[in-house]
Image (cartoon, rainbow, N blue to C red; front, side, top):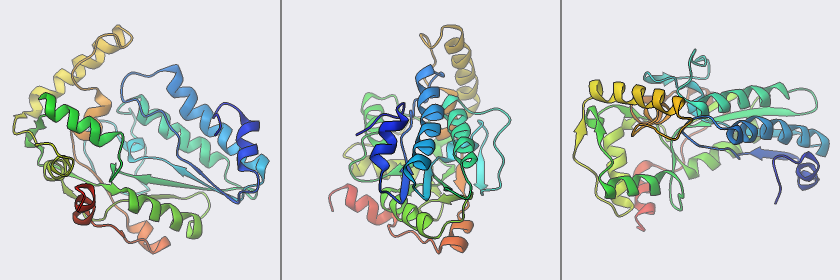
Length: 274
């Protein structure tokens, strides 16, 4: 147990460890908060200062494809894709800055490696799937433009496999995308995920031309009221789930020999208890 704000406690917990994995983050997809900034930026800085103090040699920073999201579609993005000029939300911005903080510690004394998965899912999920099930059961979930756009996904088994490979074979100061492999239809994937979780997929859809102005108006309202009032979907949520977001994992194939060890089909069976 530890606290991201206490370097001494972090260093004590890391004592004797050769490798460190930093996966903690404030994943709030709403308006920016001081807590999110402190956790994602200050926390990252403290973790790597503690790693140096404890004598660790390699550290993996678990990032996210969200660092590349600005609102428009993100199609087959690789590790050379630049950050957007305007981020989709505070989560994207703070995670991008956290990446830069982490990479700033890369040097002779500490290897820094960055991993970006997209849409982590699987058995025992306590974040994305419960929220999707609740939204589906309450009638709040609808498909934007029919949900026919593509997405990348990353089963938790592939996340762990990717982490192990990056720590073993990754190059200091490098970023790696890790996913389940082939891109899939967003609606098909979410529908299968809901069914595996015991919920029915929605049938209603809303046109994109209607959704975008509502999201933009909601963002203005949230900023004017410091988040007290907001629209049905934040820009961060829209950038994450409302458009195509697909990643290229060629670099992981070449540098690491990465291949997914869990297929989407087998992951769905596991989730459903099969």
